Image 1 (tube, helix red, strand yellow):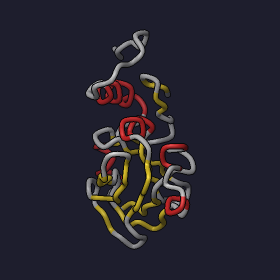
Image 2: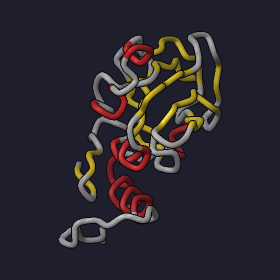
Image 3: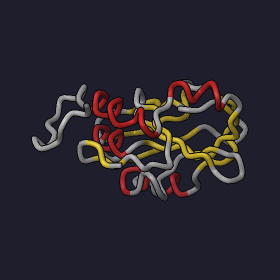
Length: 151
């Protein structure tokens, strides 16, 4: 789904408050990354250091630290659970996050521990369009004039 010029894949769940996505995998793990809009407002990623495998996190806790062009920021996890794998490409090529946020730029795989509770903070399907539009319009940027507000 394209919302105000940014992709929001139908298969993903979005934590719009922190511009993060998560994608359930066939093996029960959840892949986590930064949304395309989050990448846009953050700029280029020069360093990305997610927590190590074996770290347990609750939704909203710091998943890692990223260095952007003008700042270093903590990124928060959209889903609770244990980090089981960190994307090995990020150590040498952190720019993968801004080059391919839904593909090779994923951050970690998490074994979820509170998926049903965490879902209450995530948007997917029918709730996504209006919520994402509202979230993006909070940023001081212009959007295409032919992009209607959701009804």
